[in-house]
Amino acid sequence: MIEQRWFWVVVVALAVAGSLVFVGDADESVSFTAAGEVWGDLVRDIDQFGLSLTRVSDAEEIALGNRLAAELFSAAGGEHPRTAYLTAVGRLLEPHLRRRQIHYTYHVVAWPAVNAMALPGGQVVVTTGMLDMIETEAELAAILGHEMAHIDLRHCIERFQLAVHLQKLDLEAIGNLVDLLPQLARMGYRKYQEVEADAAGQRLATAAGYDPRAAVELM
Image 1 (cartoon, rainbow, N blue to C red):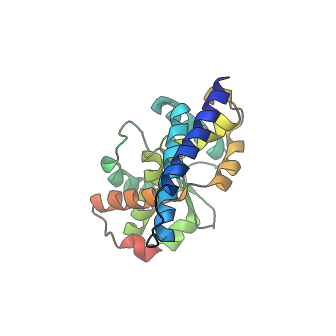
Image 2: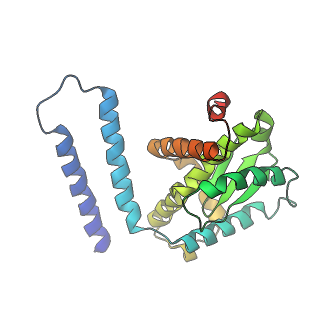
Image 3: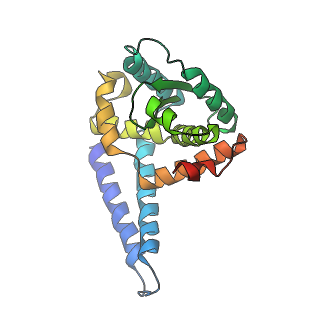
């Protein structure tokens, strides 16, 4: 009954939001870009409404991240030699984060693909392929800043909240958490979340003293 009630609340919210967008005289000066921004704002507002219903605590997020990391890296054969360097750069960015109760842990994965990812609770993963590609420490800071921003802005845990909610499970009931990762990878982040992480990550790296042009050069 409760689920059905929230379903109709969301439907009504969508209908009202749609009417607000289309009410009024047409303005030929309104571009597709402006319409896209309105749609992006609407998606963000709907996301936040739904996520507020499934929000988990910081302690639950940290426990989830620790469990994921333990399962993912249990067969890794020990810490990678380049983890210390990755951690040293990450520690320089941490004082400029908002969620100070999150402890960050950095992992290097021996994999040729150029990639980096973040898991809930402060787990940051960078492949050796990514480390081999970058040319400066400032570029590494830009990469770490982006991934850390996804955690700091709750984007990471929000992806798990949605998965947990859709499967009608709670955090304690999830069996093999690693099975969720392929689903989440396909799901990806929302466009507005990537934009937010870009901006926040740039601020983190700049606040830590790194050249803000590094992110542009990396791209």
